[in-house]
Image 1 (cartoon, rainbow, N blue to C red):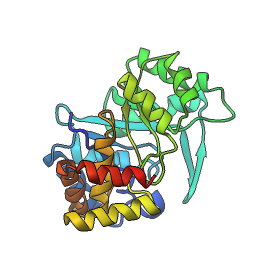
Image 2 (cartoon, helix red, strand yellow; image 1 turned 90 degrees about the vertical axis):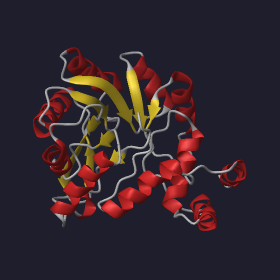
Image 3 (cartoon, rainbow, N blue to C red; image 1 turned 45 degrees about the horizontal axis):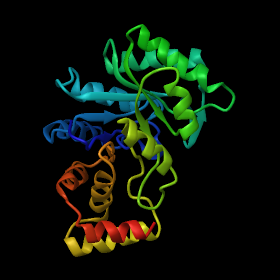
Length: 264
């Protein structure tokens, strides 16, 4: 699989709320991703809400062979800028059923628990996904926003194929989770790939030296960091999508990787 995926959060409206300002451009972005051989599209029912999944189905269904459509459940959106966790089994079942309908599929390729719910035992939330897998409604289970203990708990209940956590040049707080994923062959989908602060500033310096942009350096660094990392940068622009995908061809030198590592 092409390790560079596409995160479909940004094809919605401002604040990840409502439809995009330019619907045609959003559809073009998704179709261009297929032209560029992107094989992983990552979304969630909370993006919009619903909007991202609906646009993916409109642009890409029936989905090309080999393309994985991944979505998430477990966050709700009462209003713009408002994100709330709901890991109750009944909610996750309803969320999955609605995603199946919006994506126009009988089975979701990869279904991810968006975040742990402090008011619900984690075993119950993960167990709901395991039940949905047993029923054939999801093919593979992933997790998001988890620590090492939560990953271990989930893996004691079911097979976990992916983890989606924040990880970038500036924020490497999930290093222990990444190490587990690397050792166990679990895909690691880092979000917010550029980050902010000194390491990201250094990415800009490296980018200037190489004649590319900082986002491309940040993505290239992630790809070099571990063979299980599959970055999912998002954009609402075809031009930016082209730039992001081109980053997969950027090979950083040992000296550049060393400079970026020392800046952590």
